[in-house]
Image (cartoon, rainbow, N blue to C red):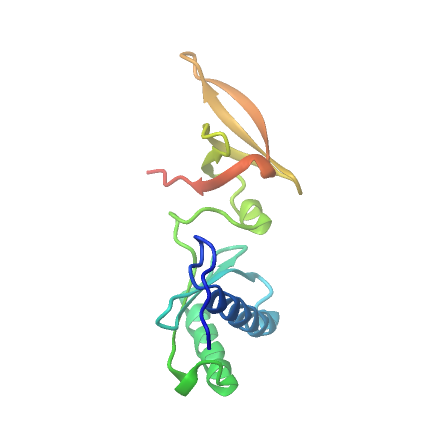
Amino acid sequence: MILTKGTSDCPLRVFCMANEQVIKTIRDMAEGLLVEYPDNFLVEIKIKPTNNIKLFLDGDKGVPVATLVTFNRQLYALLETANIFPDNDFSLEVSSPGLDEPLKLHRQYLKNIGRKVEVTLLDGAVKEGILQAVTEDSITIEETVGKKKEKKSTDLKLNEIKHTKVCIVF
């Protein structure tokens, strides 16, 4: 196999194309299993060059550890049977995204209505407030502004958001 130079995101184009196909195959397997778990959904799959697969599941009401363990065992068995990796040389980690992970899916925004979020916009501006509403193309947060701490609703277009993180409030 000849490895060719790719982009800055993926210096070896052939590896990345193969990796994208593997991720698609794993995504298809995972989504097939998720039929049994209607309250849960796939957020992201990452594969390290060492064939360490990290799969992130979320749920409308969180994901119980027992569900993550069961899902891991089911997916691991499917991956072994599919023989995607030479000599089945891979590891699999299934977890929920941590609070430090940005929201990636519309469904994650919906489940976090009522929580405090920090939104970083593409222009670098940062907004912080309570997530009040989510539509297909925007979110509404309630910010506290000024010395008088007045409440102000702000609509933000999803295509103008770089990332959104849930704030941990003690």
